[in-house]
Length: 166
Image 1: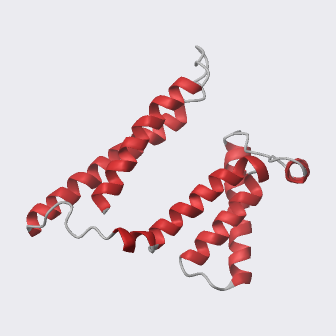
Image 2: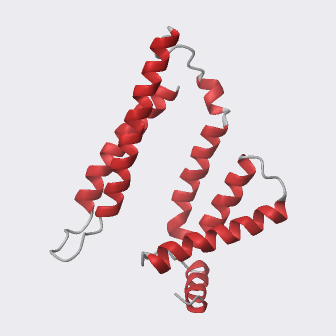
Image 3: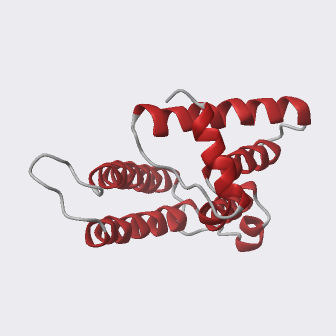
């Protein structure tokens, strides 16, 4: 299963690398352009996935196993990995509508619960703090505009941006 997932991740990263370049505005002489950082991250991801594939193949050969032996698709769909993929997919779908702050908070809460954090008050506090830290890094330090959402969520994001010092 690890090999199949890694190959799918590699193919998706290659597709996104070219998509980001085609969809982003062209870089000027004084700016790096909108596609620079996403492409850097995708290249790093592709390198790490290739390393993972190579390590998986080496381990399978050393143990004498087949590369696709023991693929349990039903077990995969019941696994935390698959549920985590669904959570990330849900965040990606919700992000344009509810904005970064609520979607990040909900994502962190859901992923925390998935990983076994069942103390709700502590999970809420952690999620709020992590959301604020991530927001401060991207919006404040890196000056990257994050999704504001629509309707009442946009109003909340604008209010939140107005009270923060950065």
